[in-house]
Image (cartoon, rainbow, N blue to C red):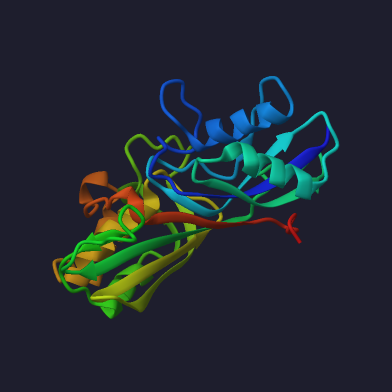
Length: 255
């Protein structure tokens, strides 16, 4: 059976997350239903990472096995046709070897978090970014972010429901970018690592927002990290600003 890698973009607002669920719409369920229109029967796809309810993707990657030999172009076109009107799009498709696995072959994942500071409510970005009404200091947030980079026990910054075997992870990048935004300022958090704990990025951003607001200092971030205690974490920010931006493999299947 030929195996295909899919690069997927989606708006997470109408979904209960990536993972298939019996009673709630999911991104995985939408794609598997589209595959069933092409080849009748049950389909199971595997993704590079499971995103929570309300979380978006710019470059999620999944793989599927099909009975028929499809050209990648025809497969992506057919899937996009059957995915309508769901806010999901196949933006890349490639034939891969049988040993390619969207999750286990990945060597890096990159997330983006969008935080907008302005008094007015969001209109076009409502549900696609987190808005706060107060000013934030980008340099202070970067100073706090720098305390988190490297290999650490991230118990403080993971959900109590996290199923990872170990809280020890290596964070390669946590960069704060400041951009102009109509009536305010947008802050983009670029986060990069081989793998992440459940709620890790949202825990980072919620804590760093407190630093930017002046309620915490960079030293407070270090103390929270060293505590290895979930109770020491700052607020966990909402999901709507979070995007799975890209997934990296030893050899890019989409080139």
